[in-house]
Image (cartoon, rainbow, N blue to C red; front, side, top):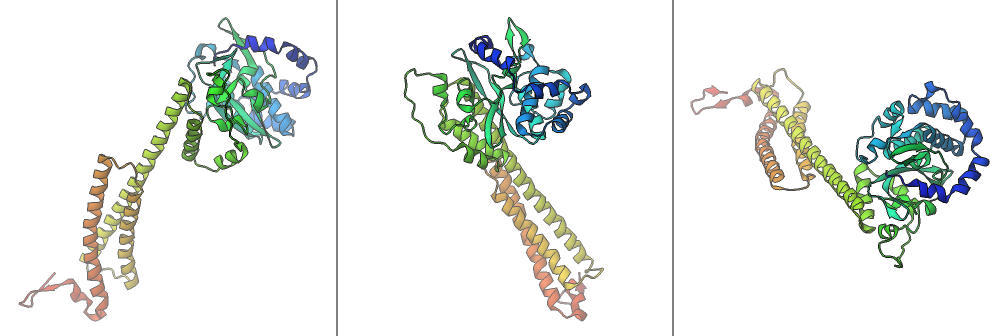
Length: 391
């Protein structure tokens, strides 16, 4: 993110000095200063150290925030190359090796360690405002539930500032356990849910595009919303997030870009789901065809070696079931564009043709099973009018 923290720091100079003079977290901070270097190579080892030294979530979340803000340097070189959409797998441990990153790295590291210490945490993405001006690049921070209360944390801003294109580590508590009503003055999440406010601030209000406007508020139960959100699939979460964003009204390019990204992701999920359904239909069809061919081959061998009658019925029932499952999967395929319709029609035609063959086998088997066992062999032959048996 683009740092302009000198104004903020100067605004709270007296608060910061007071905090340094009587730091209630001093005992916790001291323990984190004693963490062995060997225990800082992975998020697991850091979490393990914290769990062994501290017991409450209040203590643990402080330990996480303090250690990160004291040990991770901001990557000034890449401060304008923030990618909130990159794959975050392994990102935290990678950061621990370089000890340098941007906002998403700080947030992922905080979230990763927090979850491993038993703290419910989320990485929040959005944009910020400093000195009354909205920043033109996105930002990432964290939220954590401590003793049934949501607090906000920005380990990036809490670690230091950039002065004349150089990073200066100035660890502070201004963005530690911030309350939602104060945090939203400088941090606007893309999804209003993560404001943790019953009357969320709109994008327009945050950007203050219309000075003096009276903004209408609607009650929003964010706790219920989050509880429901946690039970959804990734795709469903994305859909509900996008809906809340659209209702909050897009006012700037950052929000618009994020909204478009969400819609592309939703489309990707839809295409993937359609492909999965279609591929499943193909697999069921192929399974049915293979089983049908196997039955025909077995029939050509005059059911040798012999199987029980019930097993013969099951062979055809399984084939029938495969074709039925294939059709059921085809019905689930959405996005009926020309190519999709063509593929579905071809598959449906193939299933119908195979179904005709299957019906022929059913008729034969029904006749075969209704014949006395002593005369069943004759079922495999056709007789000409001359009485000569022909297979």
